[in-house]
Image 1 (cartoon, rainbow, N blue to C red):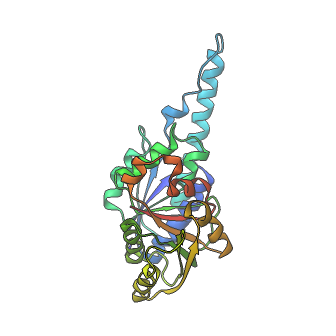
Image 2: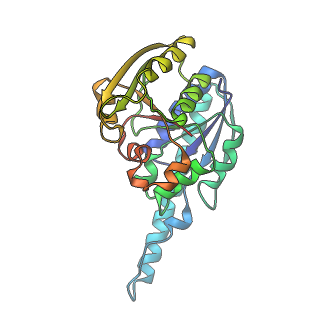
Image 3: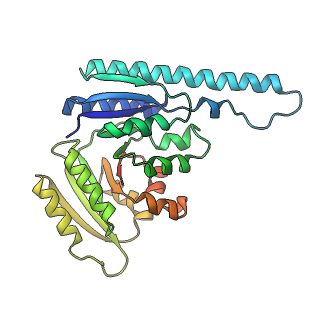
Length: 276
């Protein structure tokens, strides 16, 4: 069940997709939406080292970057309100974040069922100085579940669930089934392994759990590594959304760019449902 959705507004193509997805989900579930801006103007004001005598030029660059970003954000807010109105979805309010762009999102997520925004836009549009650190911060503070939209919109009809032996994987699946964002989707379930599968009945157990909720499920046991093979598998099976989970503690302990979830966020051109 979804009754409240938090939407990140950053003035990028990802924001337009996040708005469309969130308002459609709001219509399906009769949920209320809250928008929160996620642009750090202090970071945008930093243009790097300035050569002697170039202060005036640097100042113009700062002002231009901030102006373009603010205009893009205001346009995103306008589009957000317009979509809410056209879908007859309640726009509870807009939260303008003036400091750390993710502090408001962390705070607001406490009383929202789903957070929707373009995580990949953090890497591609320079919102923050250290994108990986920003995402770890969200996960560490318990911001979940997150629907990380892609740059281009696509209706969700077929969902890929990446199953692993970790408990976080099962918790993420439970979160997805309990929320049931898109009723009636087909579930494609995959478990990657090296050599003999450590849990031969894992897929069947997970599939039976999904079937208990009324979902159609097809399972795949694949020899390979999810870090390198997940997105290729998703493309080959015409997947519209990937459901995957990861422990925030593990992310902190391991090399960030070696983490499957972060690598998938970097590269995925389809939306992700992330929890844990």
